[in-house]
Amino acid sequence: MGKQVAIRGQRPQGLPRASQTYAEGRMCAYPGCKTRLSTYNRREKCWTHAEMKVPRLRGRKPAAGSA
Image (cartoon, rainbow, N blue to C red):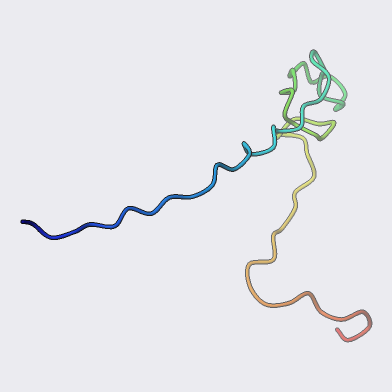
């Protein structure tokens, strides 16, 4: 006969949590901007008018007062 093959299984797990949604029909808070925000956008301004956030790419956050 042939070689035996073992099959492994896993217990079924729950589905991933649904993405948080926000109110429909929200508009950008920037004066004069008519951009409608996505229901998944948690900010109050569109991408063009949102404040820029610079991500920390590596390393640890410096301790308070050390820099």
